[in-house]
Amino acid sequence: MGSVIDGAIEEGSLTEKKPTVVFVLGGPGSGKGTQCANIVQHFGFTHLSAGDLLRAEIKSGSENGTMIQNMIKEGKIVPSEVTIKLLQKAMQESGNDKFLIDGFPRNEENRAAFEAVTKIEPKFVLFFDCSEEEMERRLLNRNQGREDDNIETIRKRFKVFLESSLPVIEHYNAKGKVRKIDAGKPVEEVFEDVKIIFTSNSEKATV
Image 1 (tube, rainbow, N blue to C red):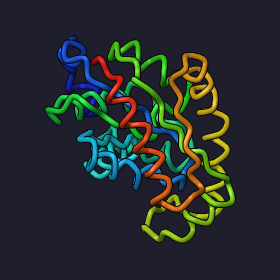
Image 2: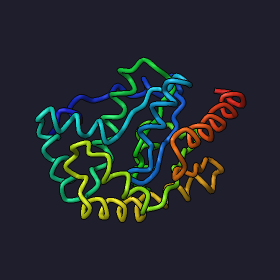
Image 3: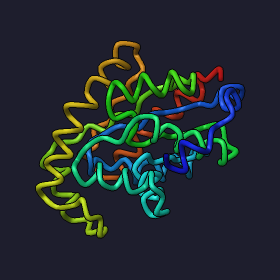
């Protein structure tokens, strides 16, 4: 199949390091990318965006990339193992041991597969809570030339996010691992809230 699956990851090499993983979840346009950049700068994490890794794979022109592109166009979710292999590869190549994984897991199956394959549970989940109206406004304003930023696709993505990701948030919430952020506020205020979470977690960290 595609290049990613073929490039098998040596088992155990990631788990031996016991990296710190924080899942970053929020609807499209909730400001995850901006805040992840701030966290990288202030707290030394490596930011891995599932979406960016998938887009890079599409650009590579591999068979895997073509399959991913077709699924995204149809508003479907890419198979877990494809995204997990891309994430594992990026984690190993980074040389870091602290990761923000942005936009993944997108559903319960993703979550279970990630924990089963990597043997890693997230330290916590950073959930950017934002109203659909605000996210829609931001997406239509940002003009990044992303082909999936039109109103119809945006609404489809909201629906997929709500149906798929909320069970993941509920799963980790039951374990006391969700840190919810009001992402409707201005960027600077949102980061103040983020800083409090990361500062208190690093003080408590016994990693």
